[in-house]
View 1 (cartoon, rainbow, N blue to C red):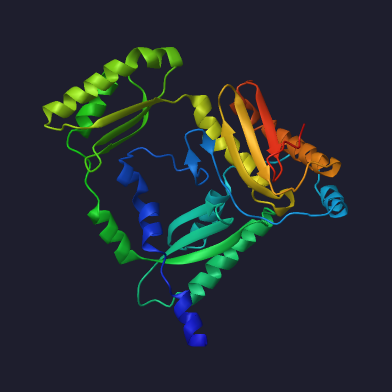
View 2: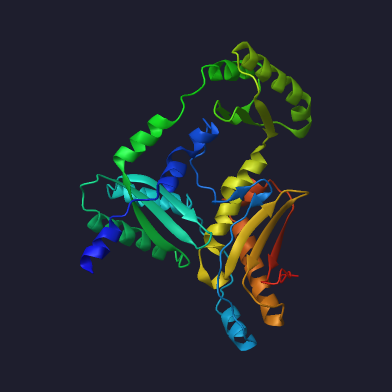
Length: 334
């Protein structure tokens, strides 16, 4: 039994996970990537993170549960999200990291990839890292997460990195040309494998409408002059507010709502059309008075987070709404 257990502890991180973590940006051609963690599962309309949780089937149990949820009158927000705090702590302990990620589907898990050699006994390293991560989660009272630690072989990283294509030779020409025309590119990706150019441009809606076609024409001209044909060119507008919502505002809510069991949250998402709407789904079974009280308390806590000294300026005074749903997709914070 001990031999089997040891072999299981030595299992490496799945190759697919390793490849996604190390070089997903390169595969997509992304050359500029923000380091700050955004929830796994980003979609065009927002973030969709779904998990399965138990729920309270009786009204007395629900009433008892609601009474345990504290109302936040104020909140001290950390300087970074949970993955960055774990990353920082592990680096301080001289742990050689490959990645740290928070996933929410199908379960809430903190995953840590640790660099190691094939002939190295990974069991004590795994135990140490697991304990460190659990200590960080406990300190922040994030009891909804479990912890998984994977061994990442250093040789695998080198092999994967070498297998990816090098930046296209015409990439610099495209970027220099756009820079000369004062096109503010905040993120871009060029892939000769999939023949795609993906680009986000920081601009007002009106200005973006004016420059979009001309920008695409400039890129196409450079591609053709370099004997590159058949490319799709995808240009999207991005402003600072959109950035703040995706990178700071929603994750700040997620740390509290998704990271703590007491909220019974199953997903968090958002939309910006026509205004910012935060959407929380829970496993609450009905729309009883107790359930509505639960929704009201959760909404108040979300508003406390959004009115914090760190988060409030990012909203730029723009209106927002919060919608909280039970398991039957009925809104319970009316």
